[in-house]
Length: 72
Image 1 (tube, rainbow, N blue to C red):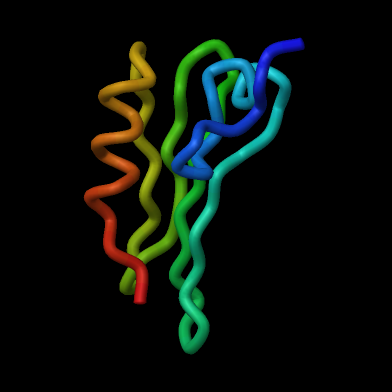
Image 2: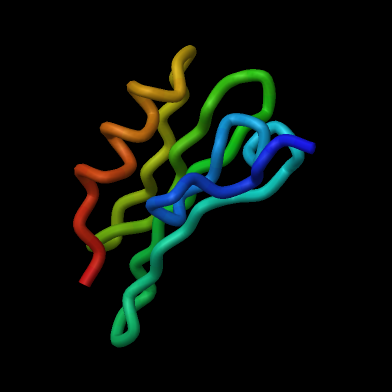
């Protein structure tokens, strides 16, 4: 059976395809961001009062954008 998580703790492509989502959220604000897959890879969230929603064809590009969003 394929692994759901990488050694780093992030989800594998298989894990995302199964419907699992990576997420990070702030403790003292409403800021959050998620990474999931629904035909495309979606990075969605809310930061500093702005809605975030970007779609990517590749997991590499989606992870790069997801990691670039700093949630505190």
